[in-house]
Length: 294
Figure: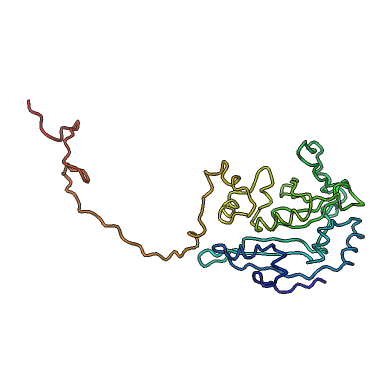
């Protein structure tokens, strides 16, 4: 069984600071951010990696293998404090080697004629000139779950040529909740940088889809901009519903004294004076104003 030490607040150990690329300091200095925690995990042993490769008939990419030899998985979270309430917001996770499991291809409920993921195959949408070939749910691809994304989809390690799978045939893809594939990176190292620099903001993987992140997620992106994020994507055709919030103002104290407005003296009801000008000399159709001499 895996040992799970208690979570650590912030960057209390140098090797964790190196693992998170110094992102903890940036988060801890951001307005309203609180409870930046990292779950420290022991390194995976080499026999655990060898056992996984033999069991799944797949060779792990060298960068992912080195990652597991440094830490058997990764989990970092942070929250924001609004008024007196603490709201969990950011989450960055990489499954441990034991939880790097293959996407289930068996029938649902184990019924003979029940649908499988392979039934979703649609070869009409193959790779274009600038788009890589999408993974397949059948035996043509081998897919392992790297990050469950808090239920917003799955980040997957994908071997494009089936078993036996070679390390150079692997890529990182995002499977959204509608079971559509979106390419992320060629290597695990490149994906890990994306994960860290996007601060684990909710639904950040959807920034790499054609339909983008939700309006609610855009609000958080505006307040805590990812380090390498293209901020133009936040404002293009979205100004009508995105509130551009200033975190330094949002988290200021709201206990302000209300100052009553001063009211001027009431004017007589029959007066022709305006609020600040001379007496009115205009005529109305009802005969009010100066009399007309015949």
